[in-house]
Amino acid sequence: MHYGGGKVGYTQGTFDLFHIGHLNLLNHAREHCNFLIVGVNSDDLVKDYKHKIPVIKQEERAEIVRSIRGVDACVITTTLDKMDAHAKYKFNTIFIGDDWKGNPRWEQTKVDMEEIGVELIFLPYTNGVSTTAIKDTISHV
Amino acid sequence: MKKYKIGYTTGVFDMFHIGHLNILKHAKEQCEFLIVGVTSDQLCQIRKNKLPVINEHDRMAIVEAIRYVDKVVPQMDMDKVRVVRELGVNVVFVGSDWKGSEAWRKYESDFSKIGCEVVYLDHTDGISSTLLREKISKQSNAICTMGGVK
Image (cartoon, rainbow over all chains, first blue to last red; front, side, top):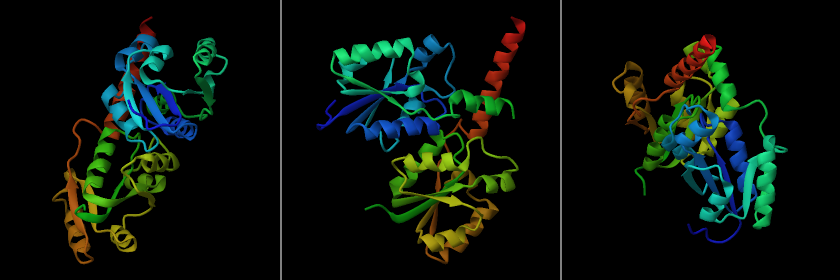
């Protein structure tokens, strides 16, 4: 991938039932970099680690993320390993919602990333919105 | 140069999905500047007798973030002729499922008097906010049933 110079950022997620929390995260991420790459978790990856199937299939989730103005590139990803992602996309900065702050896996990722010169930034999480909350709203109507 | 200068379309855009995206993408292919009217919560309540799952503020923010969209306005009523006149719209896009309906035959005739055309866009099969609601409810019921058996 050719980025045209500047700071390259990366973030990753499922982006199922695209909502305002997703959008806020992408917009905040784009403020910290010049080129934003978004990894969309594949259906199989979500099945493996969340033990549930996304409502929207991977190609459609990626197509919507790709259509967001602040997103420069979007890929479907099959791993949660951020070192793998870095080997592929060579980003300088990685973003995650600050709801993961203090989580052992993400604190370890922060250390691993710093060792290879990548900054990990926790971005403000939008309270009260999530795919799970949307599903609950619909199920309880 | 595209065929039309200013295009307009409206919708609820509840739980933004690929069908919404396709409409916006195809609309933008035919006009230089695309304005989208996002139906207000109140108008949804009046017209459909139900509130969208996502509030109007969030629905507008998401439509605004789509790269094919140049401007978003709230749709507060059904007076499309006034909007077309006020915004200088040259073309109104609507899903092809409305073609031939009484309401849209009337719109075609009203718009033509003020130099605006109607273009019907293909509807994406197999997806709608209603279908999503049904799918999510079913999944959740299935999980409840599984929980009950345990």
